[in-house]
Image 1: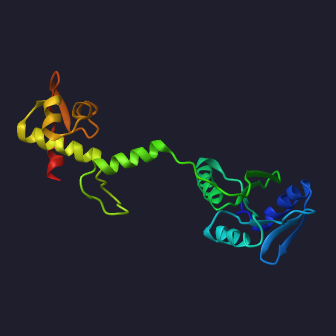
Image 2 (image 1 turned 135 degrees about the horizontal axis):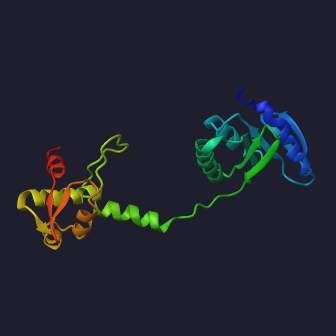
Image 3 (image 1 turned 90 degrees about the vertical axis):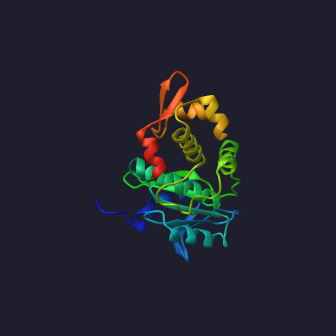
Length: 217
């Protein structure tokens, strides 16, 4: 199946606009599609065979003419296509752009967002999680844009526990928490995310070979 062209999108988009009372013309100045309805600001639709930086730049440029700017792309295919579309949909909303998808086989247009101001909703849980990670992390062990081993506060705490066990031998969780300052020591060793710890007796934990090896890296 050949890749759809921008021109394939025009007929369905025109029919959709005409269905809600607009007069529609294509290639008016720089606009791919322009639609007029009595007494209202014009609607502009930019057509592309897929999301791209060029599409977004063109659509944002059209906002100098009207606030009612849409982008239209063929409907996605499969879960990867939906994930990509969803990410671009969020970006378009932040830019104040409307978003249309076109089912080319049926000639159907679906509106996913209308143009308008966007006010992002803050997530208090995510904010608190980031602030906690920042506060708990010792120093600044990573390089921005890290591609590989990422040192988190959790890993730093695990390394503190492992180092103490390597030096002192098996210990109770409460004693280890007091010695290292890692208040969640018992829980971390019980979960054993990295495979570094083992329970040698009830409430007493030691270091595995993997834990010893990790301290050498």
